[in-house]
Length: 259
Image (cartoon, rainbow, N blue to C red):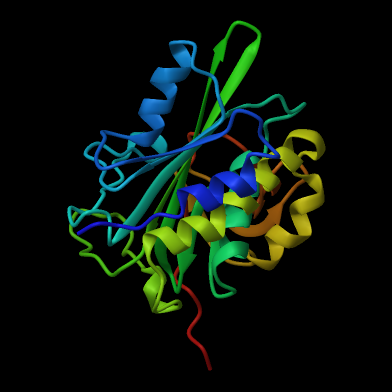
């Protein structure tokens, strides 16, 4: 089945903000993040939006797999934005990206620190940010994977959600078009302004706020939002702790039952 992407419309909207910007759609690749990282290390540092209709070796945070469906990309949207980036502080970039994803798609979506999008206690999308330095330039690759249609939960740590549950007409091209320009704007704003000004907006979509959570580093407590750097604030028996390590995974307690 042929997918009709809006690549030209995305390029026309984004190119004025990113000189040299290109949009590339591939029928299949191992990983859009891996491909852009390979290109950057080979000296190809142009701003690029790379979309895969199917990924054979998608990757998530902490080395986890991100499985892409096999039906020509109709059930999932996987893409990466690569560009040279030079913020004063990289802290909070994944939160800024997650925030623009939920704001661009639907009010029901929530953010699970540091880089997942959830719907009704299930994971709908994931974000993976990687960087590499070539000479004096640092190239950032922002990968996003979104479940568009329901999928099996086999082998997944968290039950999956689908965008079609809240946007029945959602498909890969329309979802990409909804996100692409706001994503570029958000990343460029982050480069100059950082995360601090986004705290209030993040808290409005924070899945964990006020909930008991457990961390893979052994910490447990009540989540109290994030600080200006994007670190998770955790109220514990020994006081307020900040969780900032990218190697720490956080799991919420069961959501309270409505009364």
